[in-house]
Image (cartoon, rainbow, N blue to C red):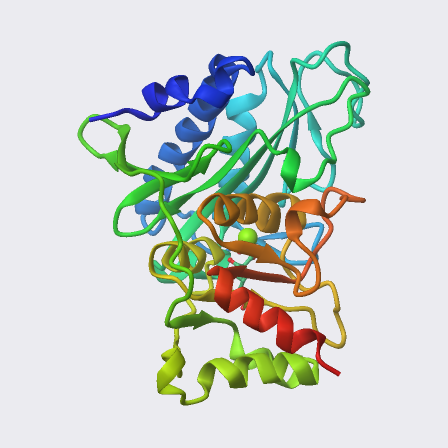
Length: 331
Ligand code: AHM
Ligand code: MG
C-alpha cells in the first residue's frame, strides 16, 4: 500500500523542485477534502443543505456547502508559509496568506512561494440530491515578480478529489496521472491506479444537451456526429452527463470519450473557468495521453488575463477531441 505522501516524495521530477513543499500543499488539500466528505455525509442532518443569500463572482447562487468547502480550503492554507495566494471560485478576490498585506499579492523575493487555485465544490447542483461532487486544484509556483496568473503548461501539480461511492484523489505533477482511494478506517489515501492512460477513443460523449438551441451550427454537427450510426467507428456513442465536471471527466479518463462545455451564441467563452477547472483537468488529460482544448486552441497554452476567466472546454480521448475540433473549424 503506497500512501499519497510516499508517492509524492518519490516523484523524480519534484526532487530538485520541492517535493517536500508539494507534499505539504497536498496535505492541506487532503485535509480539507476529508472534512468536506465528513460534512457532505451529514449535510442533511446539520442544516448544511440549501443556498446562502450570496452570489459568487460568476453570478451563481452560492450553496451552503459551497461556502463551507471554500472555508475549509482557506483554513487549510491561511497559516501556510509556502502558499501565498489562494484563488477560489467562491472568492471574488485572491486570498493573500498571512505575511503579505492587502488584497493584491505583493511581489516576492526568490521563487519559493506558491499559488493554489480551487473549485472547492464542483457540481454544486448535485449537493441537495446526494449526487457526485468534486474539488479541483491547481498549483503554480509564483515567479520572482509575484505573478500567479500563468499558463496551464506551467502548473507544478493539479488534480481533483471525487466524492462518489468512494472518495478518490487523482493528481499529476508531470509524471503521469495517479489515483488514490481514501481508506475510511485509517483516513489515509492509498494508491489505487498508477499511470492512467485515456483510451485513444471511447464510446461516451458528455454534454448538457439542453443547451443545444444556443450552440453554433458546427457545435450541433459535433454532437450529431457522435450520435450518428457508424459501426466502423463505434458510433453512436452513449450519452452520460452527471452535472459534475469532475465525475464526468473522471469517467472519460478511465473509459475514453469526450466531455464538452462549449461556448454559445450569447456566451462565447462558455461557463467553465480556466484556472481552476479547464487548466487543471487538461493537465491531467494531457498527462494521460488525451487532450484539453477550447475547440480551436490547446487549453494549456492560454495566457490567463484574470483569475476567474471562462473558456470553452472539450476534453478527453485524443481521437475524439480531434474529431470535434475538425468539425468545429469547418465552414
Ligand atoms: P460549479 O463548479 O459551480 O458546480 O459549476 C461547474 C459545473 C460542472 O461541474 C458541470 O459540468 C457544469 O457546471 C454543469 O453545468 P450545467 O448545469 O450548465 O450543465
Ligand atoms: Mg466547477
